[in-house]
Image 1 (cartoon, rainbow, N blue to C red):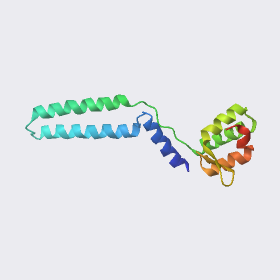
Image 2: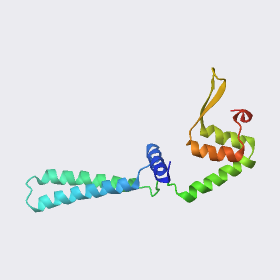
Image 3: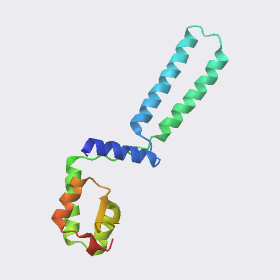
Image 4: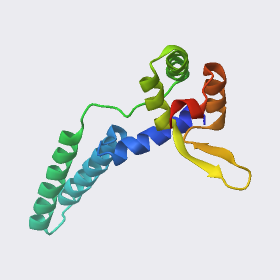
Length: 150
């Protein structure tokens, strides 16, 4: 998974957790302001139903103000190559010299499930991370699932 796809995934998870996407909110505000301008232009050009236009303007202005107040100033998390490489270095250091409890906690987050294949008596582990990431960390740290007590 490249950084752009990971960043899109992070943005989706961030939005699902209740955060607002400021870029989307700005686009919504711009759309509401365009509607306000259209109604004002229609009134100036002789739109007959002034009471409807005023009521609609109040609705749109309220909506615009609510959208503006919802801007939290916090942007969704982004991944870049430097962040990923720093995380990798920290993870390798933790796996090489961290306390067993720390290593277990990291591995529990990474491991999807562990099953024993009854026919071959092999342990099958499915990870929540891409295989290339797991190979890099596991090969560098000497991780053995049986010794971790997972």
